[in-house]
Length: 240
Image 1 (cartoon, one colour):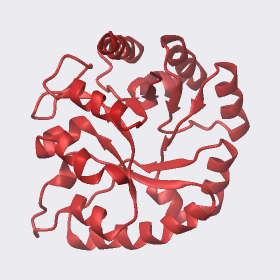
Image 2 (tube, rainbow, N blue to C red; image 1 turned 60 degrees about the vertical axis):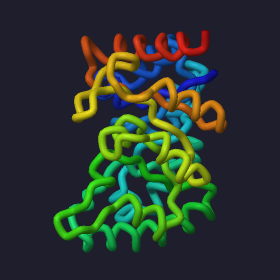
Image 3 (tube, helix red, strand yellow; image 1 turned 30 degrees about the horizontal axis):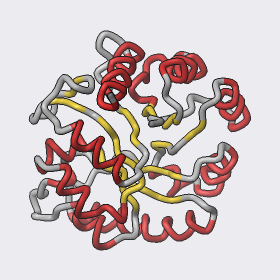
């Protein structure tokens, strides 16, 4: 089984030395990189780094505002690095007006990006499953009012609605990948296998449905590369 890694897991190292972060993740056995920023590197530099360490970009966590405000150059960059899955990692859905604005924009962007060969997706946290003060709940509206695909973060789904498997079953035809993460039920993250989230069940579900599995473990304890090593060893242990 090939696993991806969200490079936010090693964000301090990636910011300081993007190539070294990729090199270390490749050495651990991660085959797909999911950058959360490129730290000033050109598309040519990014491509050279990926080729050097025999890995590829599976998807990215990239800015919603870049698509809205700098569409042409943003799309050109992502096409140049061969990224076919543009994931919006966060948006503040603090009221219905914000939800409506986001939905209007992503409905415009989804078809435009599809014509360029790029899938637009959204990555959840726990707050999208909770009602706002005005009663609006973001996740269901994203599901029913847009064509967005979803990268479900199983841990934040666990925190927000307790049963990530039920969510996966509900939206399976809209899934593009799973973020594999662990922690406790109140929002404290831990490396894989050290929390209470149903990680093993979600990994099994993802494998059964042929979905890419992307590790994100973001506490950097004692540091990002060590935590990433703990996580891939846990996943390999599940295979035995």
